[in-house]
Length: 429
Image 1: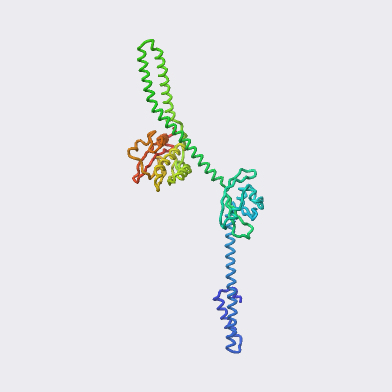
Image 2: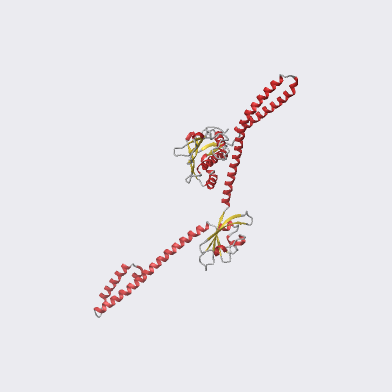
């Protein structure tokens, strides 16, 4: 029997056969039939006991395996839940179980939260939608939670109904803190607003410079004409002296206006910029939220490919980001009518020669007769455009000691490229 309890089937069979042979050799029987009957009965009993023991062993092994698996899953689940913000509620909306991270979001210790109604912590919360939904459905809502002695927190609460109606825990809530997401969105808006403000100032400066250039010539001509008129009047004699004096005053004001315009042009062209040592790839990466907004608004795919190694440059971060944002917007405008429109921003290191940045699109490209005019102020290829975008962008690039170059790739589209110098190669203006 010990063999039946512990050994496998083959050993049990061998043990039964040897036992029968041993019994027949040592015990005298009345006849062959009696001997065979006793041997068969012994074999059946032995096999039955062996089968029962084998199944018991299999059940025991299966139970041990299941217990190990359950213990492993329990440990895994406990570890996962410890890192998540989870709350379970009963039928009355009272908290039955809460993880430490969930309690921290609510501004409580776990033991303080157990037994409390969840709608006391989240005023207006109602688990009815989760109760009334089909099993397995999930409802997600956004709530502002007032925490004692702490700043309010905005949470996304996902409510999920459990399938077991008899279980004391009926609803599972997962809490997600939206503070970081809102902070990120706020930073995106601030960056976009800051770039827009810089762009408006740059556009105003470019327009002022253009107007100064255009007005300076007629003002100079008017001063010459006034001087000629004064010369003619001075020949008349003393009777014309009041008029001559008036012309002198007018000429002085014209010359003063010319000086003001020249100073304004110098101020615009030599305006102070916050140049510092920067990482070119990081400047581009920091612009990703704005680029994402442009892509979402237009539906155009924008791809960024940057070489982050050896990318130290001398740059005005905000001005450079504004120039890049404008080039990207122009490229997006060029491909908006294409289903496969693509804009690619490429940054690559050139060793000692600096860092090169390109903005490329697969649009129709720039007409040959427009190539030499696209950077001129007040010249635009877009309907309703003011013609300042590329002019301002070129001014920003040139203030970095570079040149904005436009080309037509062999596979079509347009590509705008410029290079940034290394901090050791030049000094901030």
